[in-house]
Amino acid sequence: MRVLIQLRPSPDLVAAVADPSVSSTASDVADGLPGVVLDRSYAPVAVPRPMPASPGGDPLSLNQPLVFSMAPQDASVVVRGEIADDEVTSRVSLLPATRRDVVAVYADPAIETTLTCAGDPAVGDWRDVERLLRVADLSAEGLDGSGVPLAVIDTGVNAAYLKAARGHDVTIDHERSWSPKSVSGTPGDFPVDHGTMCAFDSLIAAPKASLLDVPVLLSRRQGGSTLDGLLSDAIAAYAHLRDVLDAQPAESRALVVTNSWGSFSPRWDFPAGHPGNYSDNPAHPFNLIVGSLAEAGADILFAAGNCGTQCRDGRCAYPDRPIVGANSHPRALSIGGIDTNGTRVGYSSQGPGRLTARKPDICAYTHFAGSGALGDGEPDSGTSAACPVAAGLVAAVRSRWPSTVLSPAQLRTLLRRTADDRSAVGYDHDYGYGVVDAAGVIAALRRRAAKAA
Amino acid sequence: MAEVLITVRLPAPATLEAAMRRLDLSEDEVDTAYGLVPIDPDKNLYVLRVTEDAGRRVGGHDGGGADDGKAGGPYSDPPIEPYGPPR
Image (tube, rainbow over all chains, first blue to last red; front, side):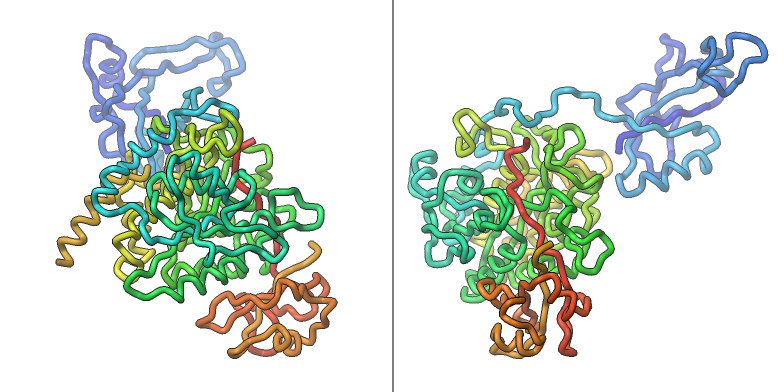
């Protein structure tokens, strides 16, 4: 978290900071603040002290006529820094106690007004995403998704649309696809919608992956909309995927599962703390099966959700900590969204997560002109697009690195460690460990291969 | 919440009928179309979808599923939706 720290150093130092002819640095004023990474590019700023305009006025009240004193004995100095998100509460309370010159610590919120939100036009297109993901370099390494099953748990995939949009054939693995009993239709032949967008975006980095079409969100329930399902359908889908995984020979075992969905509201759940609850409960059957499938060798990715504070989706009904249930699972990657300029989209949900605090894990690209599956001119958007973009990168890696050689846990760590960090203190709840960095992934895999040789 | 989930441990080969017998559940109380779904084959752990009343009656809330003839749960079965496009 970015913070402003107000200090009251010696009057000489305050006078130096206030004097435009003297060059002062943040280190002169605030070096050695425990737990604070000082922004040394930010010159300290002298701040006047508000004082009652009339003798006898209340020295603590701002609701009276005031004068502002820049006298060195009155003024203070502000510097800028960053505190790790999971240390904010303790650091903010301890700083004034451990350093007598610290007056207060304030939030330094981003004041940019240009965060991408719902309804904004696309930022770049899928070719930009292809370039940012270094798809040519991945392909040169043999990392193109060949032979890797990539399950799209969504609203169904339309292969003909994908072929037309991408300009070449796509592989639908009919035999290993799966539908809930209430869903009729053929894998790869479902109406063009959200699932087709996810499939398109997963193929950017893994054009030769084999898509397993799993239209769980087409399952009908009484009173539901046309595009939703029940968590029990996802449990059944995951049980099928376990069979898919177990049937593979160890030397090529791989399964990537992309999930651009979740629960928007606590209304249909038991309350947090109830033993039957889903959102906060690692013992819920779906959270158990996610852990079990990951342990068996699957790479599972979930969208972080579209409940970011700057422009949250209107359906978001959790009052806080909107990354819930399996979207915050410790054995899954939770994917936040950035635009192709590298800036977090305003709707991308921020952590901490409910099952695991450090969510999202990483960010990937969204809000670009891509499949067009959501309508003419509509960008591929939401963390719904970011999740399969990242899943494609994972599938690309799996072309040469089966889960028996590089476990899902090791690959999660590799992706976090190589991510392009967007803060000064490592992990933060906006970007997680940072933005997926395919070049870093390639370099890390090369090092690993050289060590194994 | 019309229906809920319960978990049960059963020796292989497990069947829905065996689970219903073990938990004394009738066909009216169980979503037989959903069936008996394995959660963790290594632990012989399965899930069923049942009415809320049945879930309350047979559920023991042991988290991972019971070995004592009771079921784990009842657990929620909330709706899930696509996360896009943002609205």
